Amino acid sequence: MPKHTSYQTKPHTSDQTGTHFVNHVKKLHTTIKTVHTSPRSEEEWTRIVARDGMRLKDVYPTVPEPGVILVITAVRQNGLALQYASKIMIMNPDIAVAAVRQNPLALQYVSDKVNQYKGIVGEAVIRNGLALQFVSDKLKNDKDIVLEAIHENTLALQYASESLQNDDAIVREAVRINGLALKYASTRLKQDEGIVREAIRRNGLALQFADERLRDDKDIVQIATQKNPLALEYASESLQNDNDIVYTAVRENGMVLQFASPSLKRTLKLALIAIRQNSDAYTFIDDSLKKHPVILAELVFDKPKTQVSPSLQADVHRAMADIVLKEPDMMSRVPLPMLVEVNRILKDREGKHIKRGLSQRVKRKAKKMDSQKTKRKRQN
Image (cartoon, rainbow, N blue to C red; front, side, top):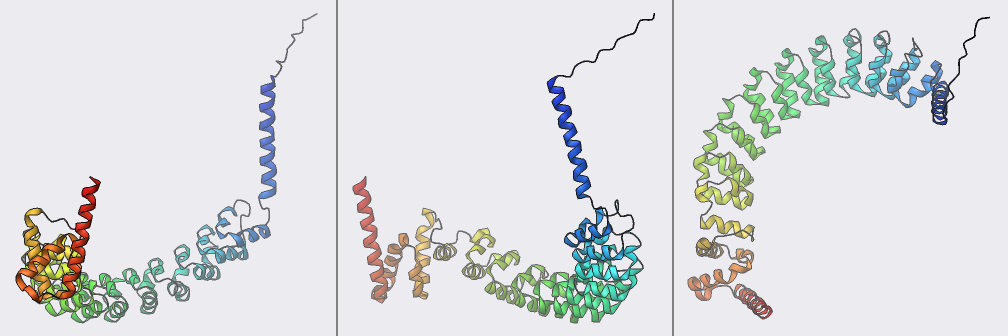
């Protein structure tokens, strides 16, 4: 009688049993979750995309051919959901209109055929002019479409056809609204004095986009710097050395000194105008003037904590006294540590002509300084 081979099953340890049980529960939980959360009908999906249109990307695995209502519902909630629609759906004009009305940039996802429809493209660009970048080449050359786009956003001019970027009426309208749109005009129109004048009257900084010849035109540059003194940066080198233009610009904005020619930066008069308008312009004056007593005096008036080296203090005090003699009101801005010395210089020069109010103020501050010195000595 043949012998039977007996097979013994290895008993599971308690740890192995527990692991198998946990894995089984996880699989069961995943299955239940999938059954309950994965929509199985178009109606269910329609309710979901009505809350989150971008969920349209999850529809196709479960609903191979979703209907128009489902897709329209999705794009009405989020126009960019159009990118997940089928090729048939992006050819549907009604779906395209719904999408671009919700988000004009959805125009990039419509079919080439739909992109030829002027009505649909118009719906997009009147809401966001920059949607012009997604328009067909044919309609980028359509004056009506481009005008609608630049009325919404003048920077849409950059997406117009080359032909319309060279169109006087189109470009003039763009720069009339926003001078910086001159950047996207054709080379020919950047040389057009009328167009450039229109642009810089709206925004002086549009000068940077004008032809080099016009940036050397004194009248043009004056208009630009009057509108915005910082336009001096874009003027020709010869006009950055022009007294009339530079002095006028610096009086309006001292920081413009940085764009003046090197020779004008060495001019004491211009440096004083600049730091009086904005003391931060001190950074841009020529190094040869940075330790000039008059410059330092002006700087101290505006920034009392300015450090002046001991070797220059006497000269700065004299310069401050000169300024106070011309403009007595400046005495109120003399920093306390310099007040007594400045007043002494004034007394030596003017004697009794110093205003009584100023002398009293000096005495009060001097007395206060003496009191503080005495107090410090006692503490020491």
